[in-house]
Amino acid sequence: MDKRRIDLLKRLTEASGVSGFEQEVAHIISEEVKGISQISYDKLGSIICAQRGTSDAPRVMLPAHMDEIGFMVKHITDEGFIKFTSLGSWLHSQLPAQGVVLKTTKGDLTGVIGSRPPHTLSPEEKKKPMEAKDLYIDIGVRDRKEAEGLGVKIGDPIIPKTSFVQMAHPDYLLGKAWDDRAGCALFIEVLKACQTKKHPNTLIGVGTAQEEVGMRGAQTSVRKVNPDVAIICETSAAYDIPGGELPGHKALGKGPLITLYDYGMIPNLKLRDFVIAVAERQRIPYQLTIAEHIMTDGAHIHIHAEGVPSIYLGVPARYIHSHAGIIHRPDFDNTVRLITEVVLRLDEKKVRDLSR
Figure 1 (cartoon, rainbow, N blue to C red):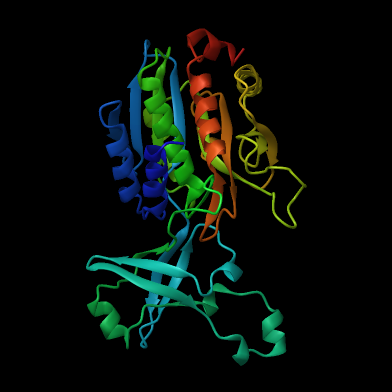
Figure 2 (figure 1 turned 90 degrees about the vertical axis):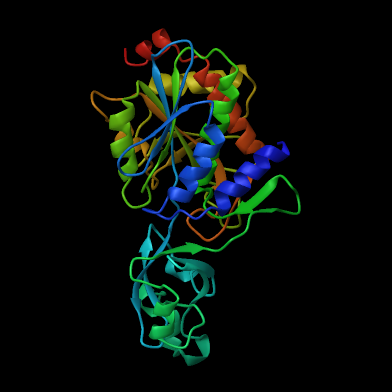
C-alpha cells in the first residue's frame, strides 16, 4: 500500500463523524473524488459520487456509511459533568477511562469517561454490569456555568479519541471508526481504479448517513440513486483473538469476507457466485462468513423498488464497535481489487442475468 492510501485511511479514521454529524467525512470524500465523479447529496446528508463508464446502465451502487458510533450530550450537572446518550451500539463495560472529544460551536473539548472507582463499590455492586446511567464525562471544569461558557450544549456530539497508528508490524493498522471508514475508503479507491478503465456501467459510490442509528441514509440515498446492483462496502468482525468464535475463522490477513447471510439480507445468489468466481480467477484471497447478528445498509438497499441484487463484502476488523479497532493492510488492498474486478465485469447483460 502506498503512502497516499495510508494517508487516506488516516484522514478518514481520524475524522469526526458520529451519526447525524457526518459533514467532516463527506468533505474528505468530496475532496478525494473531485474531478473523477459527479457529486450530489440526498436531503439527509449522504454524499453520492457518480462516475459514468462506457454506458449509463447498469447503475452499480457502492454504499458505505460515514457515521461512527459515539455519544451526545444529554445533561450538564451542576458540578460540570456531562451525562450522555449513546449514538449506536456500545458495551458499557468498555467505556470507563476512555478519552473523548466533545465538539461545540466554540471548539473541541477533551474529556474522559468517568465512573465510580472500584474502591467505593460493594462486592455486590462490582458484580453488576456497568450501566450508562452510572457513567459521565469529565471535561475538567469547575461547574455547569463554566461548561456552558465553553459552548457545551445539550445535543452536542461526542467522539471517541483515538489516533491512527501503524503498529509493530506496519500491515496492522490501528484506528477508530473502521466501521465504516474502511468502506468509505473502499469506494473511493475503486472509483480511482476505474477512472482509467472502460467499465461498462455507471459506478456510484455513496457515503451514507446515520447507518448506526437505523440505516437511515441507505433508505434515502437508494431512492435517489435507483441502482441496478449493489455491493455493500463494509467491515466485518474478525475473530482471530483469544476466545474467538472459531480458530482461524474470520481472520486478519486472509482476504475480504464475502457474507453469505446477515441479519438483514441474504445476498443475490448469482451475484454471490459471480464474486467468488472472480476472486478465484484473479487469485484474490477471500473468506466466506455467516454474520447472524450483523445488519448493514444492504438491508434496505436490496429491497428497494422491485429489488436490487446485492452482496455485502467486508474488510476484516478486530474490536469493531469500540474505541479502537485493527485492520490488515493487504486485506484492504485485496478488497479494493476484488470490488474493482467485479465492477469491470458488471455489464448490462450480466446484471440482467442476476435476476433471472
